[in-house]
Length: 194
Ligand code: HEC
Image (cartoon, rainbow, N blue to C red; front, side, top):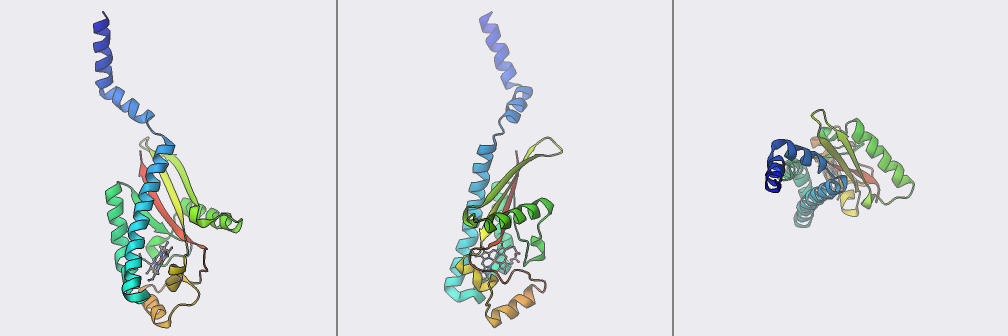
């Protein structure tokens, strides 16, 4: 009798029904937040190292090429590696592809408000979970990217004229200049379904 009960339990646990229910129960926001944070950190790290390397070897004019040519492929590669959607957005975007959608805009506006209230943009983030049409949990994570000293060469108030004319050429609708140190330049967005 006992043996039979064990077999029944075992076959239930192995059945697709049991597996799908355990799967659904397994969603844990804290774990998901840790995961998207790690994805964000790895992505920011690869961008940063490319940028810093290029700045060191040839200054902002050389690095401009990296940002212009490499930013999108680095983003695509990080997204592929982590099975997530990754993008960068800004209320004052340089690349027209980096316009925020409605919920991203709301978060960016909130970041600006929080910064105005004295919160440090370096540690500012937002994590929201929504249900998708097919019943999954969608983690929507955004991390603020503050304008550090190195960023101001290309996003600041005093931009080298040669660099400026390159920017004008590459991004005729550029809104991403005029920042001062510590302002929220934009955000990294990581979207992952569970
Ligand atoms: C060498 C010039 C240069 C430097 C330095 C630089 N950026 Fe940018 N930034 C760019 C370019 C060019 C783009 C557009 C990239 C593209 O076309 O995908 C960009 C785009 C962005 C975007 C995406 C949103 C948008 O406006 O299109 C963010 C966010 C951003 N930069 C933040 C930063 C931060 C934060 C730093 C400092 C750590 C920084 N940048 C340093 C040139 C630079």
